[in-house]
Length: 119
Image (cartoon, rainbow, N blue to C red):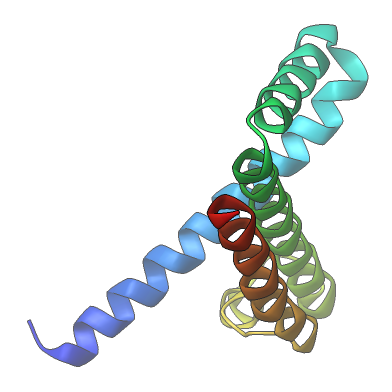
């Protein structure tokens, strides 16, 4: 395989994972209004991560940022493309300007976790 085809495969997998994550977050959010067991599972997951200390809080923070980012990308591109069509497929692969704030947050919060672990 050539490098270009591997890059295309990587972009395709990244896009599919992003769409799947956005759909899972949406279904979890909507299901929490209906099912008490979904609410209990989300609360239990959150409490378990918070009980693990700073590393658990970092993992919870990353899960929240990644899931919100993927659902925002999914629905923003659906809004701009006016539905799911060929234009939507190309738009969901774009990196939007609001995503620039994610990397510094990950680096700073990761540094805080490492500093807390050392001390």
